[in-house]
Image (cartoon, rainbow over all chains, first blue to last red; front, side, top):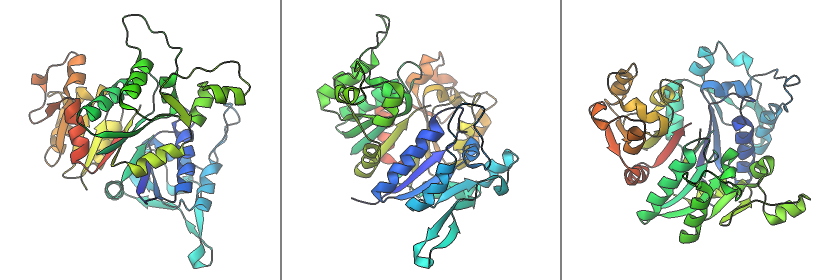
Length: 134
Length: 130
Length: 102
């Protein structure tokens, strides 16, 4: 099957609606198709990958750890927009440490999060062939 | 040109299902092909045959069903999203030990891979949602 | 590659429209559907933003979504093109990719 550039655009916070969780389910399935997959986190989407999420009091499953598994499926291009973080008073230190292991480099652990500014994000979006938004 | 259409909202709650239906009709009217229509999130409610809107309102599920019959469309409800929301075909209802099914003719239930495959196989993938 | 950006949120309620304008590039097209159709009007607190974007992008609105909301095409910003669903399909064909700003 052909390889295409897929981008999953996340613009919504988790838990308040099901979009973030079900978007992640699509991302995981996409791994089986060996496509060139990227994720974009802009606007409230950046809240999906904050560290220290605790859902004990709201009765929902905390699915943030699933993001940590993406590297194992070779999904390792998670573009995070600097301006979206700044607008929300966040920095990269507020985000989970998401990594993948590069088998071509003796399984060295490398960061999956790629910080980009708004115009760089626009450039990355423009390179995609299939853009699914959630 | 080949299209895949993704619909992320249920009928009535949001305009996206209406918009997608109008868009699908226009795609077909121009002689393009619809490879697949994939229903996700609450969009799976478009596949229920138990909707009974007031007599002067549209019955979106039936409109999709009829469009499918007319053009042999592949209308796919995501199985995981459908299970969460209680949309079942006969075999899935039986497998889950449930006493009823509610899918309307023309739709079928399948996996999320169908969405990715649609994106790969189609020239254009268009998302309707909220 | 030229991209068609599809917006369906009113700029007076959600940030989606602004976010779309912040990420659309020169030569891209923007189509307003559903609640976003209200963004086509001139003389609003949003119209200057859209006019700025129109310097290097084409902007369209689904005419049916505008009239459904009681707004006539003669109140639109000069240069915004009202189209129907056939025109919507044409835009998806003319642009290599699409992105929906949900």
